Every structure is written in C-alpha cells, then in structure tokens.
Image 1: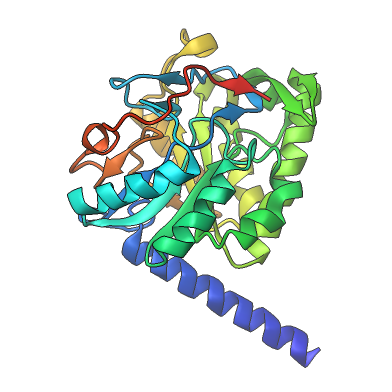
Image 2: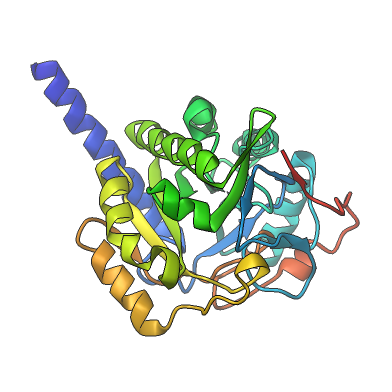
Length: 304
C-alpha cells in the first residue's frame, strides 16, 4: 500500500514538473507566450476521419489548421529545423499537427525519433484526432514527446456524428454514428493511457454552438477525469460541409470556456495555426522563408 501511494506521489510530481516546463517554454501553455517560438513540421499526409468542417489543402494563403504549403518527409524535417533555428532562434518547440492525422501513418513518430537525436533541447508535441491513439499509445510514449493534443469534439456519438461523417478504421469505412462510437471510445482510452505515462495531454474541441455548444462542460469534465491537463476551445471556421454554420460569437466562446473551467484549465490564446507554422505565434511568421526549398510535394491527401 505504501509503495503504491509513493508511486502515485512521484507520478504526480513528474506530471507537475513536465507541465511547468511546458508553461515556461511552450507558447500554447505559457500565460505570456510573446517570446516563445514553435515550428510545425507537416510530415503527416493521410487522414482517417471525414470531419464535416475540415478541408485540408495545399496553399500559402489560408491561416487555419489543416493547411500547408507542402508535405515533407521525416528526413526533410531535420534540414528544415536547422534552417528554422537560424532564422528564428526563439523556437523552443517542434510540433507535428498535420496536415493529416499524426497516427494515420508512421511519419510523425519517425520524425520525432530524428528530432530527439539531433535537437534534444527542443520540446516535442503532436496533435491527433485520437482514432488510433488507444492502440498506438505505447508508440506515442516511446517517442518521448512532451505534450499530446487530442481533438475531442463530443463524447456523445449522436453529437459526434453531426460533426464527422465517417472514419476509416483498419481498412474499413464506418459511417457517422457507427464511426463516432469507435472514435470516442478510442480517444478516451488513449487519453487515459498517455496521461498515465506522465505526458501532458491537452484536449481541443471545435466549438459549433448549434451542435456541441451545450456539450462542452461534459467533454471537459470527462477528459479531466481521464488525466487531461488543459483544454482549448477552438471557434469553428465555417468551411466545407459546415460552411453555412455561423462562427461562434465572442460571448458563446466565453460561455463555453467558463463551463469548462469548472473542471480543467482553459487555454485562451489559440491562433489556429497552419500545419507549417514557424515563428512566435501572434508576433512573427517565417513559414514561407523556412519552407522555400524544393522538397517533394504531395499534391493530394488520402483518407486511410
């Protein structure tokens, strides 16, 4: 019994130390992120969800998640990082946030292996939709990342089905409601496993007031109970199948944040960054300079 209690105390101390390190060095966790830089490495080309609000494209103009000028290889990412650190020495974080899902292929995990070897001083973070998180939790933990972001838009399958029209899971397509049940179960199990390892878990939710606006508090309470440390509510950018939805008003975003804060710390300065963002969020942006070399470009994305 005493050993179990001691182990639990040590685990909590490790988690607190890791979160404090992130708050001091990661712009997504710091209360004043003005001098903290990050780079997103767009190495993940494939996605296994059909989100109704997501249109992943290659361009240099749109400022939103899922957009990049190109998709690079894990080996390219090291060349890119060397260049980026010369241009923007404020970079403290190497992150992978797409443009597809980081667990749909092995490229993100391989990239972190290379980054760990050459840039051990950098914090490492990744984002995932969580469909494969339950079964790949051990690989995520072995990648020695410092933080993991999981997008959880609902824990009620009927609500999730209104936001996601299908999943592709182990080579089979599952539509709306059936897919939502699989997705949610895998997300929640995966969050628990990764959080128990001591990795800081952040949860993102895309706020679509008409669909999941009244569901935010339930999501926050649930993910907090599983070990998530911080919660980020992202206002919908009306696009794709939800192009006719209204973006949330400021008061709706604030109401959602207040309901979530009953259970979990809430992140309030999200810039909804591109998958190839480089620089200090809200201060500088060097993606065009950093990604100007002619790397292999993937013209289309795949689901699967």
